[in-house]
Image (tube, rainbow over the protein chains, first blue to last red):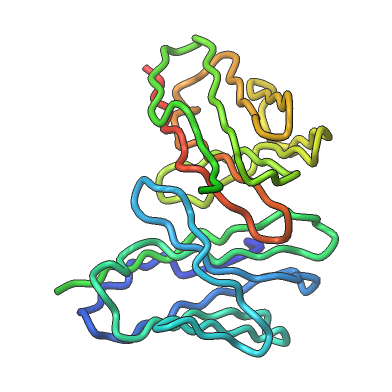
Length: 111
Length: 110
């Protein structure tokens, strides 16, 4: 079983749609959680950290369920520019600054 | 602007011909990482430096070496590139739990 699992997609949605991505992680000692965005042939960029209480940044909402070892990302009012691969990333306790990456979920927003 | 810089952005080499990729940072972060990323896959950690302390991942081939002469610079040396080493090589830095990535070097092996 992979340490961080994501549905690879692609998710094809129309502009304006709401789309949700899910991610599960296997190590209950995981401590920090992030969503990174990666455009085609570019580097991953930090989209947002994920906090236990849930957090929102504009059209993006991240949720964490520690009991179920589950992380989600909700994108409201999708834009064409949201088309990218979204990487679920986990930092495990006692792993220092080491990150474990999910395989990514590809989103394609169509006009 | 503080940033992570990688050179070159594109590198073409021949099978077996050594190649060096470079990374520099102006963030003054103490940890630097090298990742390999192949198409449609997650970045795979090759090694990292915590200050001058080098940490190799168990499954990183001996063909891959690294140097960090100072806080700002880190190099990835591929001694004898094979066709399977064609990939995007990403350098990243961190000070806390999140990491900042450079733009990557795309390596082609002919």
